[in-house]
Length: 385
Length: 244
Ligand SMILES: Nc1ncnc2c1ncn2[C@@H]1O[C@H](COP(=O)(O)OP(=O)(O)OP(=O)(O)O)[C@@H](O)[C@H]1O
Ligand SMILES: [Mg+2]
Image (cartoon, rainbow over all chains, first blue to last red; front, side, top):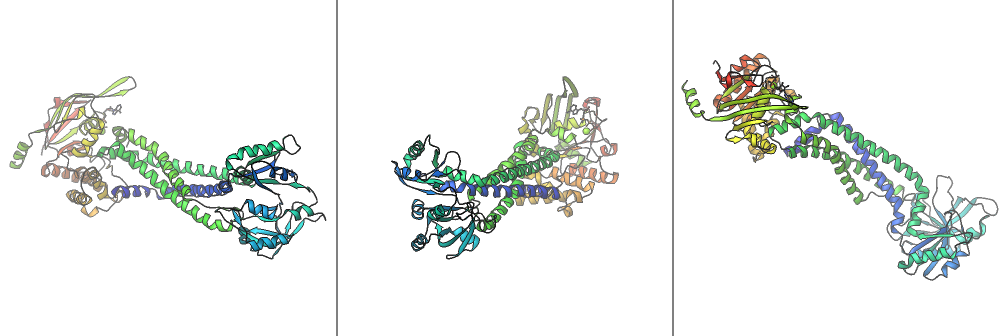
């Protein structure tokens, strides 16, 4: 009790400095919380994808297409349970800012292969299959654009139609929802047949193949077999687990994420450096007081613990405030950003990790003055006054 | 005179014994001798003023007596314990129990109130918080500062600060009080108050006091005066009686 009061009164010693220190630590941990949540959201697609799914893309790059004829060949391979394809539509709604993924796919095959992740009511599936211009959208898109079934949605596409226009019109026939936690519901799915028929260029090509293997233990062999099949052809394939694919996919728009991460990371460390230096400085000023404590009979260890405890308390007060603020922001942003960045969340594990970081930071800033206190020659320190 | 006589009878036992105490500092390769072969006996209940020119080694001697530093050679016995043979952590424990320090510059913790400053040494004991409060109140009472218990050092006068420092030195009830120029920073009147207080502590609480001072009038409050010069006791350690 006494010690706690002592610690707290030490914080009140130079109020302006303490407040500035606490603020820098708080901002640093606010950044930490935001950063980790963003990174976790980028990674999330990767974590839930099952190892039993493989994705084949053109070896040159994700944007290079594959010939349509590849799909039946892959489907016929030993070890392949089923396979389907997806394309990249790359459109936006009204304003280029309104980006979201749109994939031309084969309705039943796609929902079959992702059946443990997303689900669409049967009657909506039937209605969708009957309408060539029909699309289904994920729950997150409904929240974002307030669309509903029956709405006609014009999209500006990356590819022109045969008539030269880039405006593609679709009708919403269904809304799919996530079945497994964290599954992405921010995409619009359209009929490949309609896309194929209407597009001017690139007819007969697929974006990537999605392969379900019979036995997840055989994934590596199946992947190798697929790539072997098209080796030395004009369009060689690169087959990897869906995890890896999701990662490389996320990286496409994750570049901005990377830059922000780097900048925020630099700010985080600068903040901590500044705060740490200020704290160390404030301890150095108090070395004569540490000498008094030792004169009175406080052991080296006790003096050292006192210094470390204070450093850790400062770190915890500032850090927890920052982390709670981050939690507050993230929970607020999670809903409105569900479409662009699903799975945005500051997990308890991350919070705990943050608390660990606070302890570490406190230890690091306190250890040098604490060691100085430990080695303090009382006689010399008293003489200096 | 009778009171003094009975007291000197009870106090005839030796509290401090120095035999051939030397202290040297290493300065590069050279050894700088600060104290050389000091012999000194101090009786329990004495109030000793230590005088001498600047640099004569008074503070150095006081630091040895307080277990803040160790002699380079010689035997240092206080209350039957050999300080020269103790490790530094043993000395730390010894200090907490047996000695109180009073310095020229009050040396209080600026962030703690008077009573919290006084309580500080008691944290090293097994006393309960309630018992500690009790002892703190008694110590502040003794130095006449009960009404300033909740004040911070910055809210006290120099003399009051020094009284708090004395209360802190007293609170764990040590036998020995060591004062290094306790009035060096105070005006005459305040200094006299502090010296009277020390005198009272010596006479009524039987505290053995060793006080370094430059001020002959301060030395007048002591029972004995000891002169130092160039690291040695003048008159070979024989103490002169101060006039009362
Ligand atoms: N750490 C040290 N290293 C070298 N020499 C030292 C050290 N500490 C003290 N001395 C020297 O020891 C001598 C005695 O110092 P001390 O502080 O004991 O003197 P003093 O009698 O208390 O003087 P003052 O009246 O000025 O306080 C001085 O010459 C001083 O320079
Ligand atoms: Mg001195």
